[in-house]
Image 1 (cartoon, rainbow, N blue to C red):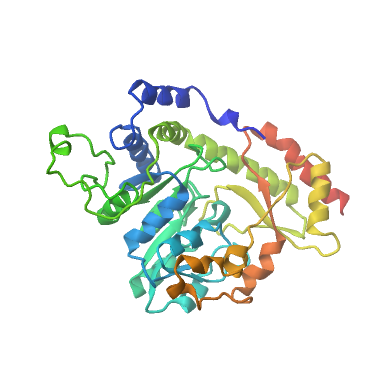
Image 2 (cartoon, rainbow, N blue to C red):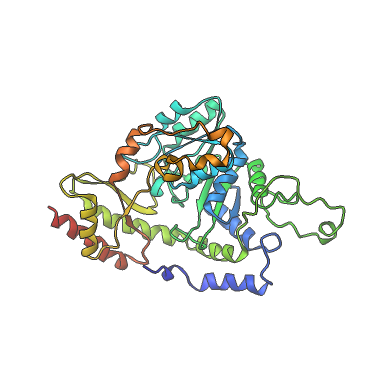
Length: 398
């Protein structure tokens, strides 16, 4: 499947602007700033900071939250490994809370069981485009003085109880990787209403430059200051996680078309809903009343024993489907964790850290059953034969 339908004159025009300007970086150009401002307006946040990935945004969020050596970060086990990796990069400890069997998202009741005096942050994941149950999560955060870093990599423009997802956490992280609702090839952007968090995250992602502001990533605006031999450039620790200007040009154009992309995914999800209606062994991810799932993928549980997951997928592809994606292995079941390879990052902290089977029984039961169907099509007409392939597969195994 090609995604060329996603790109048009707007992307090329903005990229040309960057090239014509001399192809600077975000320390001197203004395309990242324009993307950040447009995205912040779109999702309803005061501040936005662009990064080279949605992984870097999560690590910046942990830095802003003060998660460091020995801190604990609570997260679901059903998510991409980035959540675990950035926690380990901060020399913090990932703590897994089980998921809800119907929404597949982290269960707030399970979060509270994992809170200790070392807990620094809660990292819910809006899985497949569906917001988590944020009210009880925020209540826990307030009660225990924790920071909520909402991983909305797959949930651009999602809504929780009538409110934009960006309004439901201290920090909200998005991805602009190729498969996401908008794309810059690779990239990410993080939003917050807290200026202190914004400054910390921007400096963390841009080598700790002292001149960086909550709303501006440029540092070379005043040559008389910047070129003086007495000038001290860095007042904070940071990495070079900046988004390139040319990627920001694409992301800006994509942001301006975001509503169109979201509307299309919602229409395609309705087509899948219709196809599986009445099929008692294909159970779609539950979207609670008042929430809007923006369907990075259309996910469901496969609840059938007489036909294997693999047999169903094989027949679907024979009927013309694009294939069915499986869920990631649970984070603590991935080889890098189960083998103990991760411990070399910081042996004094991690040598005795283990994640035994059974710590998240609901996730362990559900993960092998999950099926994900593509929603990233250029039109309902392109999606129609893929949805029809699902209907044919259901009929075949009736």
